[in-house]
Image 1 (tube, rainbow over the protein chains, first blue to last red):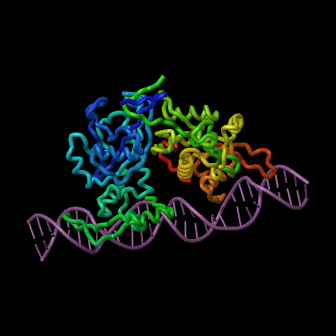
Image 2: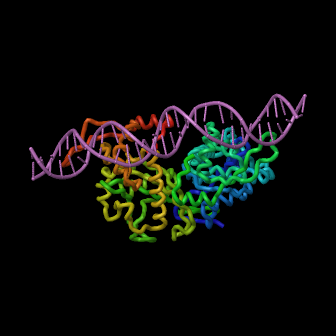
Image 3: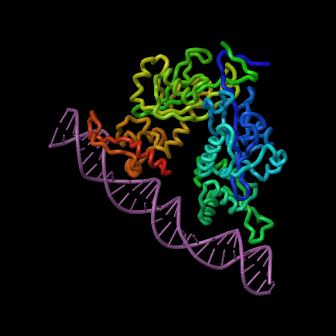
Length: 229
Length: 229
DNA sequence: TTGATTTCGTGTGATTCAGACACTATGCGC
DNA sequence: GCGCATAGTGTCTGAATCACACGAAATCAA
């Protein structure tokens, strides 16, 4: 079967930049390319958009197919369409930006580990196509957005300590934060639910666990609340 | 001539939301559609992407062709790709966001006035396709961005008074600003060059004219400076 | 059990920034 | 020269930000 049009059309793909947080480091999910061009090189997960699915659905489908991942947050990043960005011809790619809780997905990624792996964003291999540029833009976006929207929780397990949360912000913003000021600020937003639990299996004083209060967030968001860092 | 592909491909267009500032009001440029679908309805300027041009080039070309406009600022907004957004079939549209100095372009728009016109953004007619949604998103973006990037100057004539600048911000942000605080803030950024001229032909005390200092802006921007309102 | 080690958790004071606020100055038209 | 419209200017107050240090709790080893 083939398809004929009166005018030429670019091919349309989606590519996803998926971030996860591993203990101390911010990671990005990459796929090793099985086919030419750039065979064997690492690349962002992605693929062609089907005719009957929305762009976001295409992104979700590709993540599911290529890495078994269902992201906690997925939003459009930017569309890359320079002629020449793909040696096969004109390919326009809508890039998406996703956050996942690594704890949920480390296992699946490990199963087909030959093809999918998590890399530190500060130390990623050479990427296929213009994917390095896409990654750079996604990092910028993450850095910018985390300061005025509580995205970070999508990267942490459901229950976390304030120290974990602070490390997350420090890693993303690439600068140290003051512990007391950080806690004051975060707790004053009243987005965190204090649990009657502490972390387990640590060889020092255990920290209290917190949970992100999604309901409250939705409420405050609607009310036009300001979540600046 | 026709083009055949192994898999079906969506058509790819660009659409542009062009803002201008007219005395007191924020305007958007619309084109009256000559053809079906939505014949006779107002729509955003735009059209199909050619195979050898970048997305941004396509946006510039369409603006030039349809309205004789060369925008002072043009950046990508968002890509709209829901199946069903165009009754003719699958059409994915990369939306762009543009600012122009209305003073430069009022004339050209008037020449083919049957087809292109400026409308108040608060009072625009029903639009074709999902263009109302695109316009809404562009307005949001403008509102958000103007607070931390000095975009506004792209909407004003090269020489302007501080009162004009304040009105611009007030129109975009939809709230009144305090004159003294506004001037204090803006002048403290040192992005404005004070000229030895005052406005002409006003029947009251004439205000001093200023010019935006692009060079200084580029410098400060590189240095990671913060231009919050 | 005691002391060493590690991280947790907490408050205050200094400084900076944002926001409210009202009057005199200038130029034009009559 | 008087009235009118807009230009242009400074201070004070409350809020937010930032820098900063130590006792409490839990584990581990001797």
